Image (tube, rainbow, N blue to C red; front, side, top):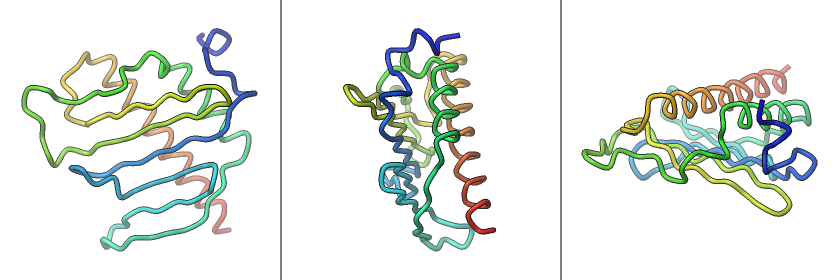
Length: 139
């Protein structure tokens, strides 16, 4: 497990930024430092709200990134040979006291299958945590 050896410690954690969209537009955004959350819903309406993740949710995302080897992901993961302009693109950024790690990932990435899988798993976990938090805050 990489948690103990990760160059980024949760005690120094500041925020996570998660953005995604198609083409050059990363219209869907979340910033844990500000709580700003916006996304396009099923009816193509832009929804803006304030959503805070609690310490346990942030710790879970920090550990999930460590488990999947996020700190070793290349900064840019895209299809270099024949990029699909309509493929979903993601920006994942973890911010700490002394460092930050940002990865730009395109769903049409033509790299190793294990790296693609790790990216997709991290993206799904971030989205799941955001969805669960949004449901909790509606209650």
